[in-house]
Amino acid sequence: MNAPTDPTKERSQHEDDVLERIAKIVGAGVVSVGEHYVGDDAAVLKPFVGEAIVSTDVAVLGIHLDAELFSLRDLGYKAVTSALSDLAAMGARPRGVLLAVSAPPGTDLEEIHQGAVEATRATGTVIVGGDLSGGRDVTVAVTVLGECPGRGAVLRSGARAGDELLVTGPLGRAAAGLRRRREGAELSDELVEAHRRPWPRLAEGMAARGAHVHAMMDLSDGIALDLHRLADASQVGFALDDLPVAAGATEEEATSGGEDYELLIATNDPARLRMMFYDRGLREPITIGRVVPEMTTRTLRGKDLARRGFQHRL
Image (cartoon, rainbow, N blue to C red; front, side, top):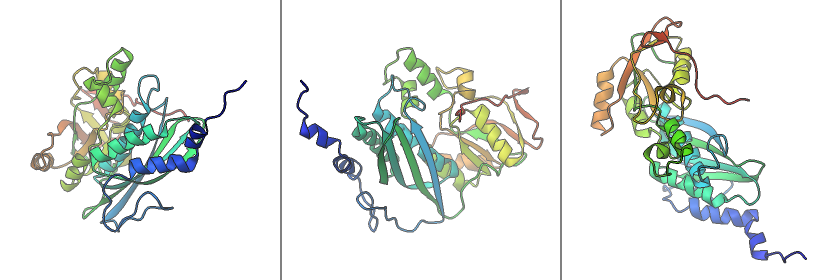
């Protein structure tokens, strides 16, 4: 004989009820005067200052985060911060986040949104809307909105021969963190934290744009792949003297591990960049090499740097 259905539990999975609970989670932040966020068919934002910057990222449980090792809250957090990193790469100031979640019945949607809200509060932005849908996999699609007042966004296509290449921090921490977690490290391990709770370099991106750098991008798939992408876009080559490998990481993790979300910067005025970072209390960027005119020259310590890193199979 089947047990009687619990009407409270059944009702708890109805869309309107789930939306109501999620609205309480994401709507607890400060609303800017004259703007309207969750609760209507669309968000209402005040006019953007300068260029409006828009980007979308998708995070899938089991691909972007190991479901056996990390929580849904981590997925929500990581989905938001990795998307915000795209704004950092343009030098943009964040204005809002839209979160669309697709998941199988029974998924703890509130936990995902709690992680997302933790990310927005940590980075000084806010969730302004989103959507829910049933689906086969747990998928979090994040659209981020930003603005570039005054001087326009920094593109990856502006690097010039003679520019110095710099990164905002040591590389390989996220990849090393995943390895360590698989080896049994606790979630509180510093490197594991770097993997499950990445930090978008928003302040660094805005400082770099203020320093009039020529090109910039975030290192999401590994510098051995992303630097080639910047060089392709700018139609230049590069010669790297060295790479800053994070403590506890291997050089392979630093070159192709991905998900560091440090910024890669090309500038002809590194002194101005360093002064801007110093004035804003930011860690000094690290020089790794220079841009060269020959597109076929792409080296690390004089040897060809192979194009390798994380790429989806589509």
